[in-house]
Length: 459
View: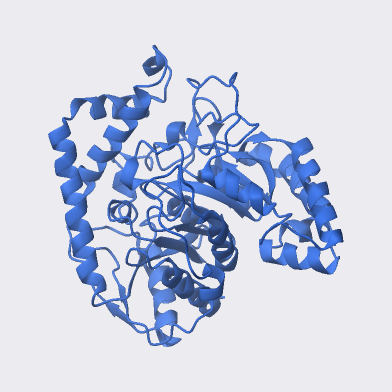
């Protein structure tokens, strides 16, 4: 098997090949490292690559397969981790020049700990905008991360490094964070699968400053790989007091259940979003195919108005809380756009913050009522495709903030619902388009099952 064939394999494919002896974790890891050397200079998906450590882990995994005693579901699979998660032995700089790398890095976040226990191969850490504050991936520390589909375009963000790495074949899967769409946005722009589970399903430590908006989740090229990663990531961790209890089934096991006859709503614009006509046509074509394949789809809007003001207040308050702990003089060093968010966050009162939380709570009630009629909601993931890299908003759009061009994603952070983006086509220019599938809180298994069925129908 040549290196290109190896890097095109899914995580499930790799485990199958390891088990049969057709391929070893060392061969797969070397192929990924070679691909990073070749492709990443043009993409900039990684802020850290540790080839020596990765190969050492791969050799241990190889011995486990030879002895018939593998550690976990995805033992030996090379993967990357967004540089937001603490990872023992590596600095976690969060895209910022204000974090001192000269520290003892001795703690694994719950995400890193679960992946390490499973035997996955840590290739390196992926880029993020500073403290993951926006929906494109560039920072004063690491520069611009580009879309492997078209390097002149943005990969999206804030998990843009992870999305770009997976899309480019630089490891079959990664883990990102999502506080306003940061997994789903780059997944849509780069043409991969990105899943934001129910809040608390993936334990987080340290606690995110974005609090109830923040989720961790898997990113991969297939729904099956995504489900397997969630089986690993959803194991409990006492360090997160908001984490959910253990799951008494497996997401991969539930993924292939029969979903035909399930009632689904489709909202083309949530009642207020302007969607690029070509994006709308591609998404609607996919929705029609899913409907014709036995999952009945009804057009319906959830019935809420744009909550952008409340979201931006909550977002700014979280950013200001985190940044207040940065060293003196940091305000002059951070991303200029982040500096504005910092100032905005410091200008709001606790009363205003709680009022915004009340809006989020009411939004959750509205969606709960909606899901009493409709099991799931389909929307476009993004109203646009990837735009020119190096910009926070599409050039010449007249928009002032990233939230204005991500209207389908952040409402479902406010409600803490599970939501996945799956690729459903490309524009005439070859840019990927995603379909978002949103479920009621705690319906992660159902969202994955319908996503898997849609993936099959559309393949």
